[in-house]
Length: 99
Figure 1: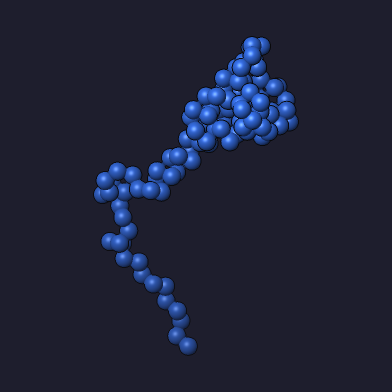
Figure 2: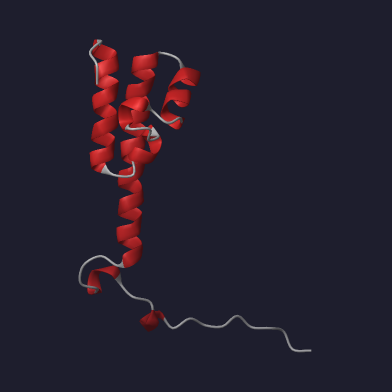
């Protein structure tokens, strides 16, 4: 039996990023995921600063919150406007004023 040879890839078929106009869908999706991750990281750090306890911070981030109309803070971080709502509530908690 003859050995199986790997197929050669045609390099011309591989798109070069600089030759495409604008970002492709994968790059846009990656940017969106990175933005979401950045929002979650920022809110997570702020929550930890407010609660000063990892377990309490995780609990607060992952449960429905009355000040957020029953929504879960981490879920709201899907969007920039949601992150701002969560941030507003956290600042209110930190500074002792009602959200």
